[in-house]
Image (cartoon, rainbow, N blue to C red; front, side, top):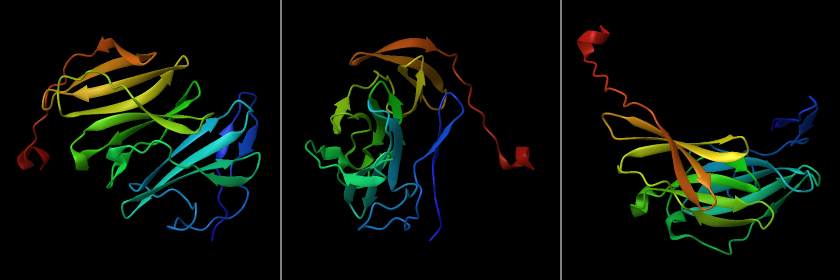
Length: 195
């Protein structure tokens, strides 16, 4: 058992620690720590200035969600009031991106052939909501969320093998395409080029 902590940096250079005690490695009967490819985390600050960590944990087709509060130095479980069908099985979750009171996650629901979905976790209501996704012309794409000037943006790559990168900004419940970067020419390598 090792002592573990997460650090948050405030604007004044102060540091605040999320964990100040030891935790067991993640298991199906405890909050535990994040395991890549079988869970997701998101860091945020609520309206009371409490630094929090949302931990989504999946094991054997089941999912648990817990929130750690640095003020209370404790975990609490999030009960599902809105279960989404694509959460069944083993969807792949991105880690959270926090913007204006909502923690956003991209979820690949490949088992049900639903593609990538965007979910928002309202940090005050502690509820998930399915969000709209930019209108992408290709089935093969990848997205990355980023916050710029307190607004949620998404870089989307699509169109294999001639990849295109688009920059989208969320406005309300819809998306506006801001920029289309020139197509990226495919790079084909054979073993003889590498040797």
